[in-house]
Length: 218
Image: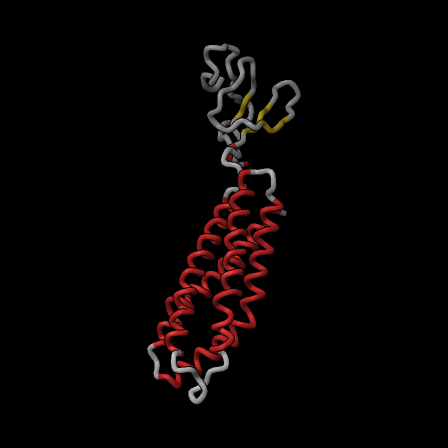
């Protein structure tokens, strides 16, 4: 469950960061260089559209990140997700207190009805947005780190396991020892899984504490 939540959270936060990054470094610099009439119309339309979508996106990202921290609670990964959630809280507060008021005003501007300092207000919004993008990028990096920390580094992949063939009754069983791991003295009949040797041949591990790796095929 935590793995699925980590994938969903990383995807949602990552897409939000991508949109805001594009607004800051691609779209708004282009709009700012347009003639006044076109720039005002484009910024007003963008303010209305993103103003309807982004509140849900920010709050949704915050809820998912907080849920990820709760799902990982009790592990070192939970602290990483918790810091990411705190950064998203900062971005939401910053948006409501500083950016949303300018955005709401600019959504109503037209070529005929706009203040004299409209470019200065837009540039101030852009500077604040740069700071917000830096915050949510840091949050996204922490979410991605938390997601990658879910799998223990010491887990043994299934392909590294061996099949043990016991000569007494022919039964086979799984062992958790990876290939190349030290075998206990006294183990017998260890046969590599997928071996090309005939079935009647078996790798016999010598019952010798001084030679734990066996001495070939008998």
